[in-house]
Image 1 (cartoon, helix red, strand yellow):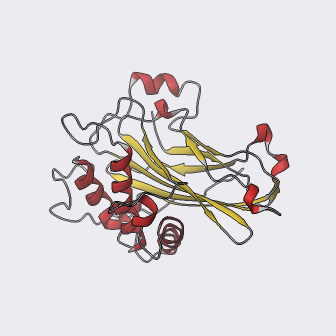
Image 2 (cartoon, rainbow, N blue to C red):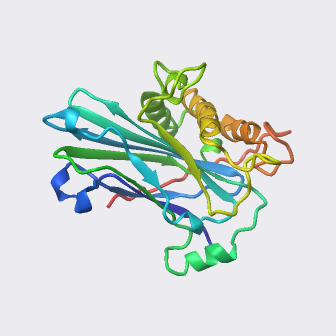
Image 3 (cartoon, helix red, strand yellow):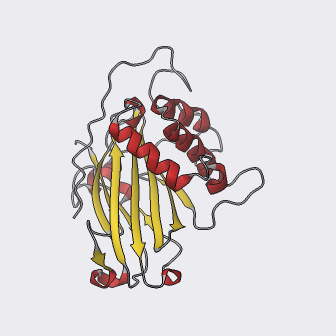
Length: 272
């Protein structure tokens, strides 16, 4: 069975749409993001802009859920962060998604095999939504497959770095957004991680899952790597933070020798 893509379902359709057209009092965006190759990471940024006559009536929070997380192969975990930011005419809703695929893991499990019988192979529904409001919405999705091997100055890498710097830092520092040094995180921030329910653990011993404070700590490192245009640090930093050899080189952190192959093919991202 081939697992190649994650299906993201988030807030709006492409373009500018009155919120009254959204079904079931929600606003949604649907895009397709590819899973990384084994030992690599896909990174995606989602952004939804809302403008309204009365911006104070727009919701503060955005929800991101993975109802079909059981469809993931056991080698994959998804880290995410969402928040909203006030703008002059409304509010911006953003999501950061980090998809890591551990090298050397089994590609399928009985649970995953059952799941793909009724869903597209290798697809996961991530649903990001909010209550409908009288507003106009635009959306943007940028993703890089195998982002840890991307060229640091490529157009897509630069766009992703700019989005993360704007949406998940304050004056270039992610600390005030995610919290640190005794300061609380942004009250609109939500973080977490998804997997198929039986995949590899984060860490060892009793620490087999990342609690919210650790997710924030890890994502600060990953955001800093992106905004500093150091994609090669993504996997080593995640390995150090989680105490797991993710790229299969036998070490935790930077390996003995860099790999030479670069793969930044992503698209197209399809919005419906």
